[in-house]
Image (cartoon, rainbow, N blue to C red):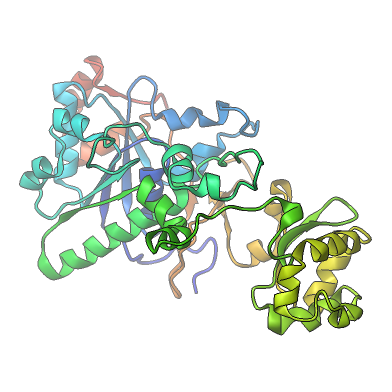
Length: 415
């Protein structure tokens, strides 16, 4: 398996050219994964303000930080061209880029793509081998196809997830930033990879698509499948009225928590009672078997809350691990950069290259191929940083590039 920092001789997507006309996370994050595996990714941005995603850290309550962490994460290793696609000359440049591309990623509304002449049918005429990937909020059909959709609205709220996790009488939980975008981007990446594989067989490109709405439904698929089968309406009871005390979070003496997940309760019950120093519970008539534990779940919950409140998390973590009980600690974000298990499994990667602050790391994409080292994670681009380079690969002369700059069609980053 390739090691961090290796420079691989060949990556699976070497030679694949990707053009992104997309903003924020869902579509561009699929491009990030393609780039990790060797694709050359060009990100088209607005020449004045760039991708609005560059400014997401200003949205409260996101963390304050001296580094633009959102841009580092999703734009790493990409090339930026600042191009006004609303201008006829800018559209011509975009068409030239896509004509030479293998993959085009966009999240623009269907009506905007039609206006720009960048629908699949428009571009496929110029490039029949093109894989055209369309990321949408609510899908590209139906009455809401043009409705703005973020993962908080289309993935989290509309899918039913936001309501499903809310205990009876509790407040709605807010989605964390890009909580649905990143898993959804893997669906789009998978569709692109399938289409590239199919192209190897047929020689033809095709359009692929995925939406935040569909990905939210997939994330909530068990409850939705129950509804499709006529199952009862799902509702999380108030904690004090829990239906299962052994699949529940608990708070320890130091205020830290863990999530008990004894899905295989019949196997783990005896081990669990030993782990918490309460073997007598096995003989308690209220808890002696699974039906009685279910019937008396609120009483068992109250008892376990008192037990776990007697010791800190470190104690219970050691005991539950030692007895083979299924649980997970409830981590705090600020401790995860030093999480030994994440580090051991390559969850983070160093960001390398000129202009990168020493020690900067990024979250790696969660796909790994044995024997393949990913492309090193280089810094995210400045707005328009690669304009001349990208246009040069299209065969544009210096004079033509300068004319585009003077016309405000292209913006070139200052050195």
